[in-house]
Image 1 (cartoon, helix red, strand yellow):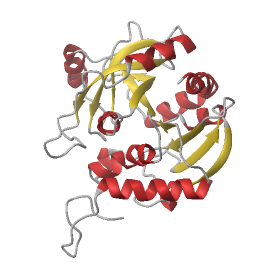
Image 2: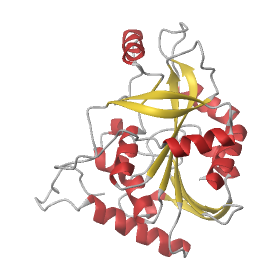
Image 3: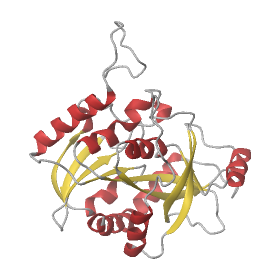
Length: 279
């Protein structure tokens, strides 16, 4: 894969990320014999089993068979792309896993999937993740929470140059309302993104609560910004897989995150299936 740091080892300019996304989109659509897709989903840690309920598979293959994609580096991220057709006849693109900033590949690979989806025609991007809950007084482990806003503490941004993107409503109020129609029990919260890969310290959790955060994780916000840059609407959903560090006195474990995802797969799949046809 080409370097994302401005130049290749030979000194040549790095490929334009939007041209690379357009190339990947063309390869995808050619492979599945479609003119476009309408909706794209990015499945976070533990969410992949939920994808089975969304629609009838049209095709599935390793994401590395498309230009510009890196292999998965995290357990629970399958590194595959699937196209499904829903009961209502919509063509939906599903990324079973994502690239994270902490993998050290730079910002462009993190948002390449979202940019590819938009280049393939998707006007709605659904971003899911596993998150630590910062408000155990109202959050239960295993509960999905709509993302109403975010705080970007990754120190990174996919937008470069004098592009002043309005982020007043990163996560579409219209889509959140449709999600609540599908599941009236859904709560909303502010997602805080840190670079990772270390989990937060108890002191950092106290800080994030003070800043107004409700969930914390290591993904999603850069993809959401890139989606807004591309003109797509964004719906974000966090699955609360554990309380934040120091809130319950137990250590954090990635296997726990995956276990909660497996345990809630049928509920999350049913929710996404209802949502996709509404969106």
